[in-house]
Length: 307
Image (tube, rainbow, N blue to C red):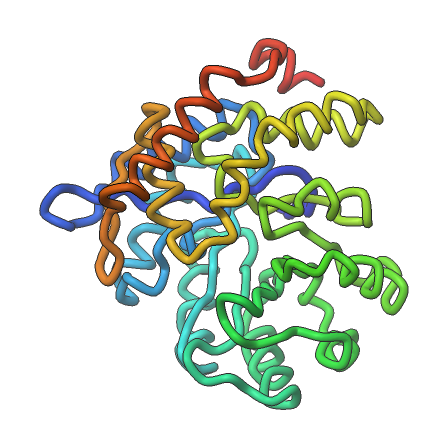
């Protein structure tokens, strides 16, 4: 499938059993539910999918299960989050063989590379796969900045086609468009600046909280695209308390707890993460329950998908 780099791509969760083994069937169910609710694509094994808590074989198995569940209905883009280029190439090639439609490529984990090292990492992966690649910029989480110098050095790498921008500084959307025009498709990657990103030129949204409220997420983007800015703003303002969770270090636990409250998945997470406890858990549950009780009026699923 050719990836249409636009719309809502939830970073889907990896479901876990009580014994901490991967629940492939439930992971497939969660993904299927999201597609039925109208998402445009899925990100398998991103941060929310707990990529770095899985070993290589587990990653390939989970990705293969998600590809099977999706069955060509939407593009499947998988996170490539590895310590070094050699490991990243190995997983990228396995992902291509497993049927992924694209890659979301992160900087090397742990080591913070200089600009030329980062460029060589991205080129090293891109040269070894035919899949289109979205680069993932998230300085608060990964301490590495994909800046204009890096993107300028990658302009001629044809299969690097998009950038997921998760820095909280929304000026970067405008700076990238001014510097590179439409060379790179921009995606909003931080939930609580998603609408700002769309206004500033992002074509889509890689989202965490979509896992709990997919219909509202889809309608937010569609309302923006059809010029119904009042509806987009209504949804965004309603959603914002939850969207802030995506910018916290416990985002995975919070998103999976939100999924559980909404009856969509389990809060169980893989070590080194543990489920939320005490006041923080109660706070997140209260936020989700309030959002569920006050959710904005939308059309039917069929109406939204047809829109």
